[in-house]
Each structure stands twice: as C-alpha cells, then as structure tokens.
Length: 170
Image (cartoon, rainbow, N blue to C red; front, side):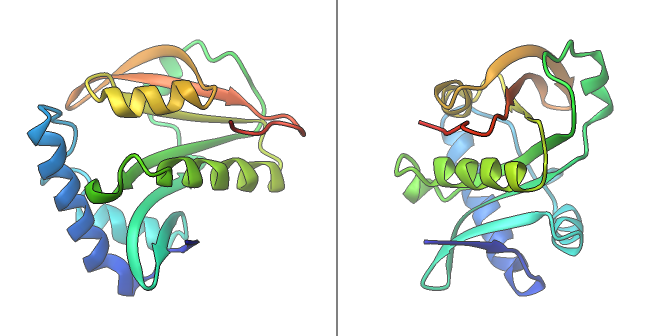
C-alpha cells in the first residue's frame, strides 16, 4: 500500500469513501459526520493546501487523513501537556470494508515520520467521544487524553503525544 498526497482527480473517490463511512458510523449509532462535514469544499481545500494524504493500493483509495498545523479555536481551552511545533491530525477515514486491518495505524505511522522529519515536537488531534474505535486507536498508539472540546456534533476528546527521536508506535 502506498501513501501519497491527494489530487483533484481523487475528490470523487474521497467523497464516496466519506459517504460509506457516514453510513457505517450511523449503523453503529455514531453520528459524527454528515452532509455538512466533511463536505466537498473542505476536501478540495485540503488537497489544494497539499495537506490531505491518501492510502491506496492498485489505484483504489482505502483511507485518507489531513495533517497540518491548524488548531481549532476550541483547542485554546485545553491544558496541553507538551509545547513546541505542533502537527495536528484531522479527518482520518478508513473504508469500512478495510477497518481493523491496520490502515489507520499505517497513516498514524506516516504522521509520526512526517512530524519527525519536519521538526514537530508533538501531534494533537481530537476524536468524537461516541466513536469508541477511534478513541481506542489513539489510546493504543500511546496518545494521552488531555481534555474535551465541544463541536457541532457534541463532545470530542483531545489527544496528544510528544515526539522523541526514538519515538516509535507499537
């Protein structure tokens, strides 16, 4: 499997993947995403800024996420443990048919390598409190829960991890 930057040609496949994930999450009573978010305009901007990364195999997109330095204003109310240059993870999405096969972990490993290569000291992210799979993933990977913010869909846990030279994900 290959991780690469998203392109304009990927937009429809990404939107189809998002729709599949929304249906899958709703079947599990997780009402995190909908027609409002993440929308096509958001994905287009992510691609234009070269912040969206795709995990694909044989031309098929199985997962994507966005990494950048943008921290939601709500993050200012969190008592973060670590400081320094911060990389933030957004919109992690894995094809429901491929969940549980380590694809999210591959993207997280990519984020860690990217962060270390570019001098980031910590990675921050948020996860919907009612999405137990996402919360478990970040906890399992060594992220610490440092607080809660509220967005349109409800409460989200804030997580962070400090990066060190020998920092490897299990």
